[in-house]
Length: 189
Image (cartoon, rainbow, N blue to C red; front, side, top):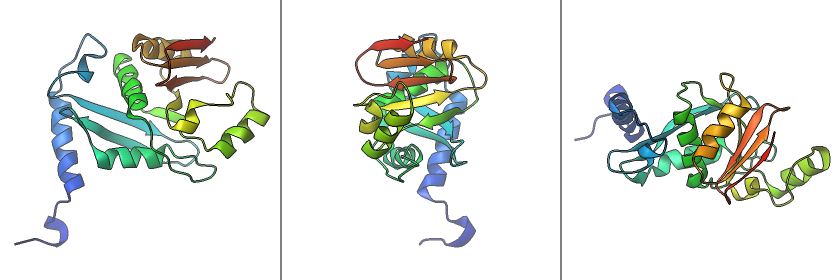
């Protein structure tokens, strides 16, 4: 027998209740990537967008499996806001972002400046902004430009670099850090 109305809990609501319990019980790890290994792990990403006013706080990995519904939500959140184009975001980039966030021991969500970029948007940015790569990993859904009010560019970059899992760019003048799942490399100041 199915129930309707306010007593009907959606799958998403149940997942949220389950995830909240896991978060509350999650141990603190001294190794930054410790939470990326082993059974019982969770991975969470928290962001907001100054451009759209949207926020996101979701657990996208539970017990060794990515949560498809959460990944779809992240793909939409990290879309190219200039064109509205949604693209699959590489989960490895999310893992770097989550690990760096956890290492910094902050509760503040990331401010997402740029996630996925369509080729049209990347080209327009290249013609107006210094430092935009022609073949940017943003166009592959493999990069994010992020900011935290409570942490400096240097602190954020050091946390991302400690992951040793992709590229980390410091943009001190613009107050953001680029994180991607491409080859391990660093740039900027």
